[in-house]
Length: 613
Image (cartoon, rainbow, N blue to C red; front, side, top):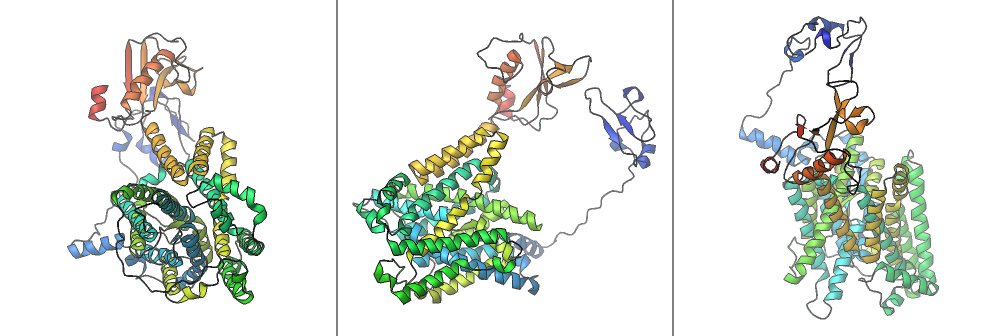
């Protein structure tokens, strides 16, 4: 491996050597004296074949031997509740309970808001989308801090899909909104479950952050514009203007600008006070992270209770303030598969369900990884997909809406003290209690307050945009800026569905493009040497091309998708020596008679690539 004529040093403090094809020196530290006796200047055996001062590692055979033992171990892996519940300590209960209580104070108003204002369904279906997904995820899920429940962008996709179908088929063959939403939730769960079963958890890395940020920003503004009509008390006037649920964001903006003077004073005042309180408390909680009592303060629940009491006492219902109205507490429905629409509707339903599944699991897996790294435990994207799929299947069977992880709610759960999945389990039980006993008490809840909760929730989605834009401009990532802008404009100007399709499609196309573009290096000889070679692009002034010989180093696998691109790149490199030179210019190098491939770092090559090569 090393010989005295190849640069072996006998210095007493350090020893170094270098290989003929590299200028990189490897320096042994001064405290490596115990290994020097094993290395001699005339060593004829590789280093790894000599005696080692380190003992061999011992592998312990502790796996189960019988079938029951295997089932017991595997069941704990696939059902995490069997792993954490038997060892649950009472010292965690107080933190989990307070986190669950805090989450419920936010989840229940959000569930009511998303179901009624975004999906245009009865309020109870928002609570169904909280209770059963939360309980199911606590059984199958691995994240201890992630809060699973309805999310504004996904609820808006469901509501927009319902509105479009009702608009397109208003003359005949109408759809049942509840059956449509429940069936879509069921298919969201099936798609997510299948992604987990086929171990496609790596797909969460394929969604570009720029594309996702552009889509989320667009959705946030779409929701804010949509809810502004309710906040200002212009719902009846918007219907006269022809603004429907299927109208574009631009149409709604034009309506707001031209009719702002006709706002309803009482509704606008209630909205302004509710938004101010909710937004102010968000700012206070973000700044006072060390004060736990501030983090536990249930501002959403306080606003809801106060607005109900004030509306009932001052009879605001008869003064033009729209209220939630009667909501039947019909109990827990029997799980059932919703009625399927006709074949001409199924394609639209499946496309929207698949888009919700992709966007939902990308955000959820990112949240799970964030808190697993923070609290030093592991999560598996594939098992998270299975857990989220099961949660949405349960929600669909019980007439709920799609539920995935929420960044803001998970942050609240973590600050409130959630340490196990018990927090989500208790939050689901509290939601069930609300379904059974609390729904009649929401009769006087103003719709403007529900819209205020949504408005502030989506406003928080814009919180990371300035930071992302600052980073993009700082490093000059203009490609990411373009992707963000395209997705944002598609969501805002055309439609929510088109923006979602653009985000998913561009992510897949970019991944395919990068995969089919093989990374190769043209090797050249270091000037002044005869047998030292380096990639030319690293230092063109010190490394020179060889006449009549082209040396190509390939450092990644060759397969059917990137072999065609390899030939084109080799031809261009042979003529110009650099991919940065435009092919319209004249060739700068003569044709090579010999091509040498350095494939020592290539992991593998498939059969088709061998034939095409």
